[in-house]
Image 1 (cartoon, rainbow, N blue to C red):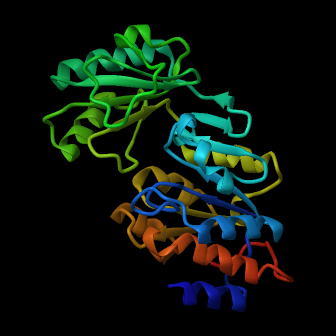
Image 2 (cartoon, one colour):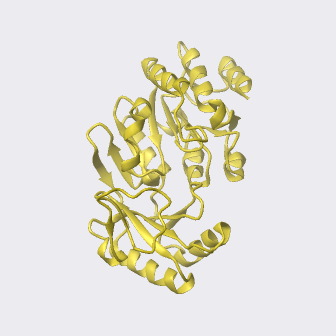
Length: 288
């Protein structure tokens, strides 16, 4: 797999990027959620070679602080599937794309009627809040607000989270998507039994495209890496897309290239190729 990419770089069928964008969980991080030394070194060296990097993840801002080594020299990460642009060193939300209160209230009411036992939580610029019945598989922060969803809408949530114990994962996501319809966007990042709901139009791709354009970087100059359906818009937007070998079938179907798995440092291996081929090659689009 890496050999195919190396050959494409050598022959000029694949251009060196100006920007590398990567998901974290299941893509850059291994199955234990750890970041390898090889990945840290590759992301440091690729920036030295003049290629920028950005992390685009479903993780909320509060889960980004341990990944400063790969965030990029700019210090910014695209979090919560695009709902927040977050400055990691200063721990500040630079911009948010929240769901308006009327939409949240309407969705919650419809989902309660359709899926008995469903419970909700929010990620906002202020942090995490949840209803008492929401079964959070993680240890909630000590400052977590626990209240009815109506009391968790100030500030407005960038992402509404929903769980329903006892409902199968696939069935749950299908039913949530049907109920939500066009009022919001339901994403799946691989977290079992979790529906992640964002405002209409809020995806990693939408925010990444704005971020890149502000820096004079266009889609054909971007390499993107991912593993789950919430990465598909980003992968189809980027000029060159890579799925790790462990990726969801939807991702494998749309990616230009399939590389080594997250446990085999697949992303780092391709980034290393970009570094080695970065001298004297063009960032103009390849011929498809």
